Structure formats: C-alpha cells, structure tokens
Image (tube, rainbow, N blue to C red):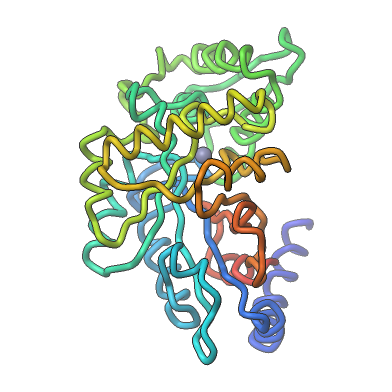
Length: 331
Ligand SMILES: [Zn+2]
C-alpha cells in the first residue's frame, strides 16, 4: 500500500505540468546543479550497492541532463552564470573507485563530458578498500545471511538471498550502524561483519569484490584526460567532523600532496567524506588554499552559495529516470 501511494505521488510529480512548474521554481534563480556519484558498474552485474550506478543508467541520465542543462567543469560552474545561458550541471564522483577508470574514463574521452573525481588517497596508496567497501563487497555473497552485532550494542540483520533494493536497504542499515561507531572500533566491527558474511579478508582480492580502488597508474591515466578534474577527498576517509580538527587538517593536506605527486597537477577542490562538515572545517578550507569544498545537500546550489559548503545531489543505483528528474530539482 505504502509503495503504491509512493508510486502514485511519483507519477503526479513527474507529470508534465507539475514537473514543469517544479523545474521552473528550482531553476529560475540560475542555481548550479552539482551531482554526486560514486562509481559505475556493468549493466548485467548482480550488485546490491546504492553507490554503484549501472553504466547504461548513467548514459540515460546524461541524455536527460543534456536536454535541459549545459554540463560544465567544476571551475566553470563556480563562476557566475552568464545571462542567456542554459542551467548548468556539474558531475562529480567520490572516492576513486576502480570502476571510474574502467567505465567512466572511456565515456568521458569519447563524449568530452567534463567530470570531477574526488579521490580519497588512503585506499589508493594501500590498494585496500575502505571499511565500507569491504563490508559491501562481503555482503554481496549469496550466503551472507545473519549479521549479529548485538554484542557491540548494535543490531542483528538478515541479508536475504533475494537481490534488489530491499536487500540493499538491509546492507545500508548495517553501514549506517557502523558509521555511528567511534572510528577506532569501526574497523574491528567491519572486519567482524566481513567474517560473519563468510567472505574471507574482504581486501579486494576475493572472487567478487566489485568495489575497490584504482591503482596509482590508473589514477594518473584518468587525471591525464583534459575532461577530468581531480579533487581531494581526505586520506583517511573518516567523517571529518568526528575526529580532532588537527587530524582532519593533516588528512586533507596529505591527500592533496599525494594527488599532486601522483598526477603532477595542482588540486584545488575538495569533498568532505560522506558530506560531513562543520563550521571549523569550512573556515579551514580557504586557509588551506582550496577553491571549493563540497557537501551533500539534495538541492541545486543557489547563486552566492558558500563555495566551501557547496551542496550536491547524491544519485544512486535505485534512482530511475523519473526519480532522477525529480532529484535534479531538489525533490
Ligand atoms: Zn567518499
């Protein structure tokens, strides 16, 4: 019943007159629409992970965008909109997943579409995925079954065998529970989940580990494209508002230095991991010499937005074309 009502509401909001009005209202002040993606994966892959968009879906989203928007680089998007121009959209990708090298790079090269890739350098340097990717990889196993973290004061979940959005919601709940744990305990609990799922070490070398970092060489190749801007995303990928400010500053600076060394390019843009930020971090960014820092905001960025808390709309695997069109206007 609930999902039938949801579908009806989605249908109404997507109808031409209502969507036209929503679109007019959202775009009348010429905001900048910044989209936040993570990685691209093949269409036929059996994967329950919100952040892994099917390549075909991404292509369809590009078609939708091109009808109404100019897709511009982040540097261009940060400049004021010129009179008489179409609404502008910026495409960004977080973390530095291997799928970006494999699937995004050829598309960007063939079509000349500008993108920004925010790279968290810890996993590139070590070659080992962060805890959340290891957990997601492990829970892709058919036999993942029961995950019990009651001993740690968290919950108990059943990751059923039926693939799809409902299965992802259970996996997403486990990730959210782990995000709420203090960072030193999180690594051990994440490994506990991986072990309970029967997935071995989950370091990215298991049989099915679709979520893993690019190598330094792949990152260098990606960065060499004139259509790609590389931004920093911290070294540790900790939620930066949950660790001491000096640790956050070191992690931000280290990621920028490594990216400079690996790509030979200056790094002017930053994205807060998970979008978590604080007033102290915002004032830190200009002092560190960045031109922008992105958060997650689920709406287009109005003119005059703080460039160090630039809102982005997160787009995931389960956003179909109707949902995507509504997400663009902040619904
Ligand atoms: Zn991230």
